[in-house]
Each structure stands twice: as C-alpha cells, then as structure tokens.
Image 1 (cartoon, rainbow, N blue to C red):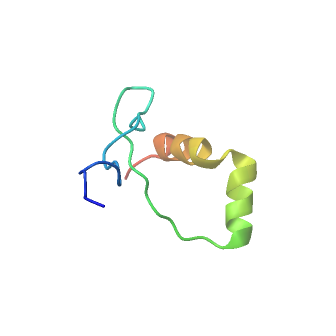
Image 2 (cartoon, helix red, strand yellow):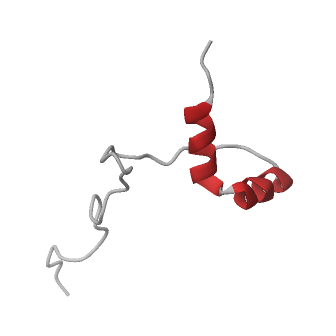
Length: 59
C-alpha cells in the first residue's frame, strides 16, 4: 500500500474559540482540589471566573 498523503491529524482545523468581543480565547490550566472544582462549577464555571476577574480591582 502506498502513502497517498491523505488523512492524519488536521491541525489548526475547526472553529476557533472566540470571546463575545471576537478576541481569540486560549485554554489556561488551573490547579484546584476536587471540592474547589465542584464549587466553581456550581457557581457558574468559566463564565463566573471571568466575571470575578473583570470585577476585581487592581491595586
């Protein structure tokens, strides 16, 4: 069987995750315990975290 150059991984394909503003979003790892993760999910998950970051004052 010969290699036809087809198939394999499709890197860079698919819809890119964008914020409502159109800005490209990247996945960011975060460390937390199982209890903290469950609470974060109950509170609204990533949307809740983003809202808290936006609302936080910088010193």
